[in-house]
Amino acid sequence: MKKYCYKLFLTISIAINILFSINNMYIGREQKQNEEIGLSWSKKAAAEAEAVAAISCSGHGRAFLDGPIFGGQPICECYDCYSGVDCSEFSPAGSCVVDVESGDPIFMEQFWMQNAENSAVVISGWHRMSYWYNDNTMMSTELEKYIRQLHSLVGNANTEGRYLVFGLGAIQLLSAAVYALSSQNSSSPPTVVASAPFYQLFKYQSMLFNSNFEDANSWQLNNSSDDMDVIEFVTSPSNPGGDLKTPVVEGKTIYDHVYFWPQFTPIPAPSDQDVMIFSLSKLTGHAGTRFGWALIKDKDVYDKVSTYIKVADLGISKDSQLRALKLLKVVVEDDGRSFFEFGYNTMRDRWERLTLVFAKSSRFSIQQRNPLHCNFFKETRLPSPAYAWVKCERDEDVDCGAILEAENILGTSGSTFSDDDRYVRLNLMKSHGDFNLLMQRLNELVGHENNASKTGVAQETMQNAVRRGSKAMTELEARQILGVTEKSSWEEIAQAIEGSQGQGMFGDGLSTERYAGGFNWLTLTSF
Image 1: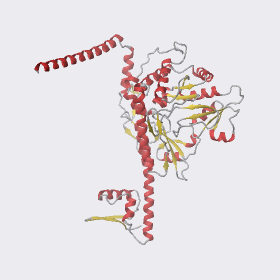
Image 2: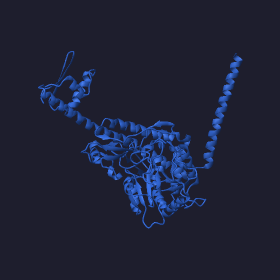
Image 3: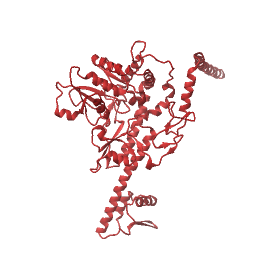
Image 4: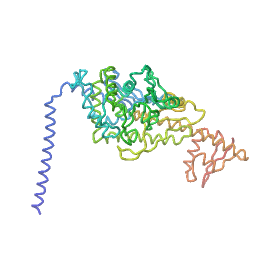
């Protein structure tokens, strides 16, 4: 037995020593590689980046290498409602405006901080100084490979037999696509349509390039697409509503798919359209990189879009392409699960919180969301759109944006999307802190509404008591107004009474008495 134990311990000891030796060998090899590489010029750049990233902004801002300098050092750029050297000073609620007007997609910030090492880029001063890559093109073949791999993993677009073009975000590619699809033989500019509510830049951009722009539904009622040069923007999922859309008119189509990713919508099937446009900004959150791409079926359309990009900008920044490549390499790790689960979980949680608030309101509502099966997550789930499309339900509330602005919430009015001003768009993609502030404001807004409603009920109940010749509410009436039950404790009842008096529900006429063995219910001493 002793001999057996000795052999067992000897075997384990040898195995442990082998593992330590292998580990030390790999560590030593890595250290040797670093020594052989001999990091020199990148050390300073890396140290500067790390130093700026380490600056404390209290979780309510960020410092950047290209940001403002004070005392020779970069300083914090604070988020909404925060100020001070380290963004620790919170502005009073009455003077602080929560800005959810723009489409800034900052909600993935924490993911990239968690993946700082793999997503960082160090660029040499002599990186890609030419207009061209070595194959005489202006597009990185490696980046193109990762874009195609990404669509294959997600299953949101068919890339087989499609041409790929890079652009300065989706906006430039939309212009290029309109140019490419326009009839070259027509003496009049094309008519561009989109169904309302639609992204406002569609209209501004079309007018800038002398195209006629109209609402798709109105245009269809008054025209026929036969023998007419009509091009339709189909934003799917839509901005602001988040619905999957199909064309309204029978013409040429450009599919704006910038939100067609699992964090925003279930992916029911790959899109297989003639022209499909995507952007880095809504995929990874890097709006400032200004990078997008188009998948195009027809060779002639592809050639025209490519020509437009070359004439306009001589291609896309090589620095932007390098950063996009680095980011997409992180996105496709473990088949995209970590990235898209983080994004979806963040947006799902925000929608759950938002839905709970609006469920308490009869004055405000948000868009209805319908479940769909998602082939990427392999489950049926609700969409989690980038925006809340809020509607003011009261007849007198004709300017919903102004009502929210009075509560220090700045959204985008419905008329900006060629819809009614009873609607207002709220961006749900801001930073974690900004979203929490938005929820605080919305809770206050709905709370004011509910308090006003309870006050009205209390006053009506008192009037009913007067009509029946009584100066006291019934116990049931009082319980209903205060929102307490027969099982509520004295402390809970007292808190409800105190809150009701603070809200002015009962005026000065409310008094209560507690007696041994119970609670003498509310007596109205005067009305």
